Amino acid sequence: MVESQSADTLETNQGPVGPFLRWAGGKRWLASELIDLIGDTPVRSYHEPFVGGGSIFFALNPNGPAHLSDLNSDLITAYIQVRDNPSAVAEFLAGYENTSECYYSTRAAIPKNDSQLAARFIFLNHTSFNGIFRVNLKGEYNVPFGNRRYLNIPDEPALNRASQRLQNVELRSLSFAKALDDVSEGDLAFLDPPYTVAHNNNGFVKYNQQLFSFEDQRRLAESIEEIKARGGKYILTNAAHKSIDDLFSPLGRKILVSRKSVIGGVKANRGRVDEYIFTNIGTE
Image 1 (cartoon, rainbow, N blue to C red):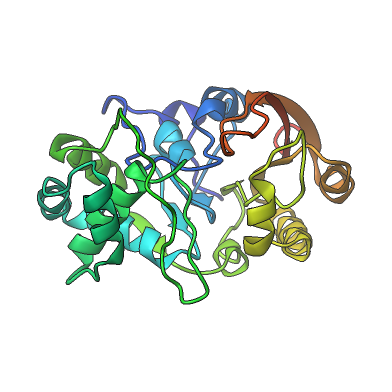
Image 2: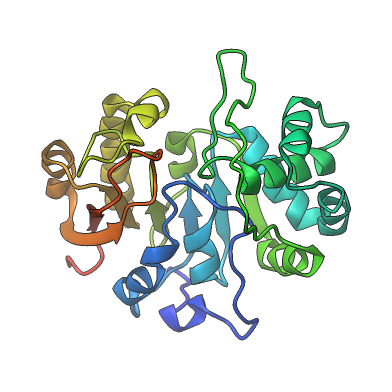
């Protein structure tokens, strides 16, 4: 028999804990809708293989086992250090300033240890242009300074709260296919891959095509088939585009949602953007 937790246990009395990173394409705006979608669906174990800023993990706050992963090894190192050494990360963070000089010198520096790497990652994330993570062909982070006037860089209390939420969470840097091999009966996988196809004039997608091709989307569809065959549940967010509709609609029900676009340069079209949710919750 599968041991499960009810949806009532997805949120505890620990109080609100938000993500400690800002993330391009993050789903904080969708959290309440996803909580309603899950409803009273039993969840044995939670999996998120494209964790990014982790806004959905922090919003759902699963009490059962949680498995967060991403191919970005620096991102996972930041999560591990916030979980295990939040005070050290906070101490390094306190030494940075929101100036162009500090930003570019920090961007060029090589961290001496993992706590410093985590602090550098968080600082660059909050002070960069649009929270984008991008590296050049040498693997060097090359996003320009964001010149942001108002910042929300987490202080030590915020990192301590995130650390408490991350206790007993498995954190790994690996491909989504390998991560999803662990999803079994009664588990829930939340899938938020980099969007591959252009939709509603979203200028951010061209960059994502280098990270996540349409062939990767097909591989993700195969992983979802395997999740379903093993008795697991999934929630997938993706671009509202015919090619995505054709690929994923046969795997579960489709829900159309809309958000305000915040990605792009000065000349980008920042209007309303439609997105799809695909899920097998409520299909049986």
